[in-house]
Length: 173
Image (cartoon, rainbow, N blue to C red; front, side, top):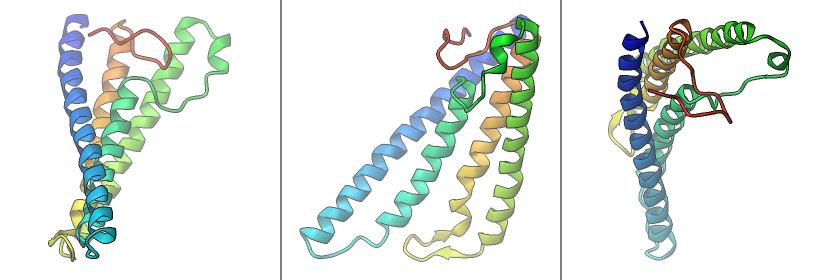
């Protein structure tokens, strides 16, 4: 099972890198769009009507993709006080419960993000001319990654492999 998990970790590592690249490119694009809007508004006395909605949509992508990768890397919010008192096996059980709860949250992101996308798919974003569902696709994509990365963490622990934790050693693939 460890070899299978190591192969899976290589795949999810690639997925995480792709998500971070998309998030990073999105952050740069958003910065460029906002800077262009400032230039157009204050220098050219005009306005780019598409820059704000496009920037907000891009922000959704880098927030949700980055958050999902943060979960894989162990940077998500947790309360560690009790963990200092427990033996290693108890820590693993509580970490797995935590990952299961976060995965359930990811499933909620998928379901409710999908519901929002369905309800807005026939509405157009006026300044962009695209479906309003695009505002909610990042929630769904982030939810899918959250579930994948949480399941990976649970399976790694079950196989006896380490998982990344904030402030600890890197995840070994």
